[in-house]
Image (cartoon, rainbow, N blue to C red; front, side, top):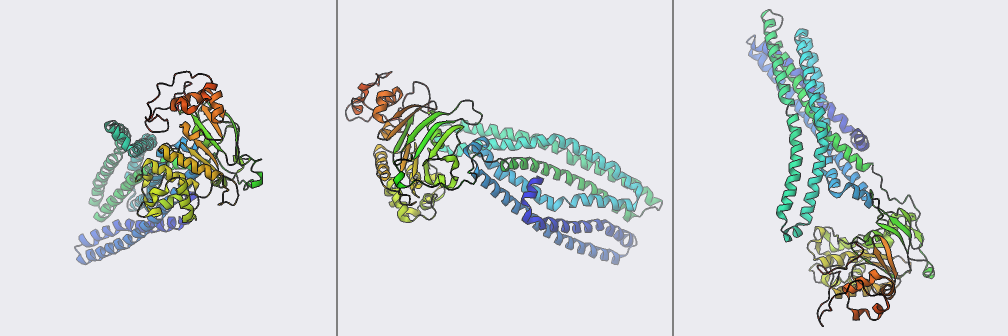
Length: 634
């Protein structure tokens, strides 16, 4: 907590001075109030002098008004400090999260990061606000009341020395047991956030499979677990106030008993006894409020440790101030490969098995690489190494002849455009989504990208065209439309290397073919946007044979390893796994004599469909996918 205060309080330190100073002045008037009341009782009520009662009453009213003014100033300072620092913390967290590589995002998880940037920061903001407003008030009021009471009568002051340690002991016993629960509560909130996010984002699937009752049961279980921890903390915390008030009331009774005796013998006045009771009440109430503050600060401390965990987590992938990489000249296009992998290996954190093993291939500028394989074979992980979303464990990945670890990340990810498996759009307009790679892209560039992505036709039909609204996640578009818009977004800014990670799975065969034709046509042209004069190089990840069969180089993945590398005809003849995938999707006559040149398939491809009937394709949703005899599903 102190570390966060030091880091984010730079612009708000004056509020931490003005606020508590105003609160001290308010406390000063609170300490004078019992003395004024004592005078009112002794000189006004006791002496039956109405003028004294009115005089001291007016003084009390004036003190209350002035104290309220100082209170309002302190409240303003507390709000400015807490909200300002909370905003700074959220900005720092969001900035650090955006610096994270996929490794850190996988480690923390999205629900936990959301909880940290919202609920945990809220807990810290509350602690800061109460710290400015109350942290000075209650300890100072307790100490001041004790001193004032002792100045009235030392013997009655012994009641403070008995009551205060008793309350402190109860407080320590309760807090020692509450602290471990606070961290558990935040972890339970993470779980609730995860289930909520899954349920809301997948609500259509849940309804389609009639899993509403199951999801409600999951949520109820998580909520009950969090409630159970909260109730346990509440039960422990609930002991504080009753015990404290019990001790306080017993102390007041003792003061009235002993003070009454001293009034009878003339050692104290009635007003002094009332002042002593007020000071006793203020002291013990202050201890109660301090106990509640410690509960708040303990929660904030648990939240602060979670916030610091994110802020202290150094991104595993940085460019280390790498100098900009000089792109190859058009004359060197034949000598410098667009992409080269040399025995690249990668394993996820905590895994003992490599997800990608010894991947080696070379792709020339302007060429197309097709990557195919069963589910779980490592296709998406392999292409994630190219824009350095993950770092290789060993080996190397080169783009345009330079190791990706030597590229500035901003330049590398401008040269490499990637379309992920899941079409992700954000709320705004089509224009704002397309301009992610180039904020200054002109309308002509946007329409050119939409034309190539086969999205221009449906965008033109929208009443507002490029300025048509996009809901969060692109919910107001179909799956195929979302995929085409994300492809167009990757094309804006003229990348030199385009990665399509199974990004045409929701497209029909005609649109998919038109898309690939447009990309091949673009690959034969010079890229004008960066002024490099280099052709577009494409990497296509797909489970459709039709999407990769025309590629210059096809990489067949199986269990993280390259099972085959070559052209379509070469792999049909030499790679049994590729041949098996082809036979599961295409008819023999579509493959021509290539099948005859290779080995017989391990299993019969099944009866051929009748003429004119549609054939199954692994890329279409719900269609029969390829069977990987060696096990790996993508």
